[in-house]
Image (cartoon, rainbow, N blue to C red; front, side, top):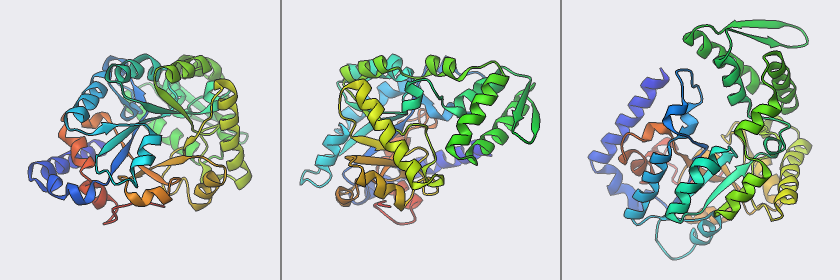
Length: 351
């Protein structure tokens, strides 16, 4: 069903592009620019048949094509600070910002060389507990455990559930059930449950984080290569589920740790998950109160002049491997019309 929805979405983008509707509405709906959201840059060969998180990764070749294509189209690729200077400036030159969530090691290995070739800045939002190896992205560690197991045990203080993961379909079913279970837990319980799951299946959290996530020295290498390091909380917490005190701890703790380790200011924030049922007015107000220059969500939208007054609720446009088949998919989205349709007629997403 997910594949069918993706195919229908791409067909709709093609219809908007080839009919001329996207380009006709672009002057009205494209806004000043857009913040692009990415996660991983990995060679295609790294994905096996079981890859429930494959949508979070694009290839270095596709990234290179995007940067070259924006250059040919006269769309500037700029930093977040420059984007904020431009959104309420008289200039109508369009721009994009590249941002990466979580802080994966492939951002150094595969993304940085591409950005350096094009001379383009980008931002990596790092999760501080991934950097210090006390935690790891549960969605990828869960994938790794299921991929290498024929049976996965989910233990809680009151029960143990066993999932058959011998066959590919069973692996996907187990991943769906267990990821839903993780999403229902507060962040402290997520950390405890992941630790238990990892120990039971011989996949230590620290070893996984060391293999997959950037260290402080690698974040420094990103900075030296032209990237800005932003904050993505301590534990990748679903903030709306936590108390206000925990939200502040997640934001302040991550910024403090990153600034101490990197020796520079950390000005920009990305809310984990970032949809309306993940982050709300309380979280937006706390981010503003704590003095972050910007804070990005995962709500789909372009940037307009009004966002100068709403810098802690910035929308983004996700870049997925589904767009790699044709350059017009992302171009159509950035024309603004699909984003306005998605937001039920609203041009600017500010909440």
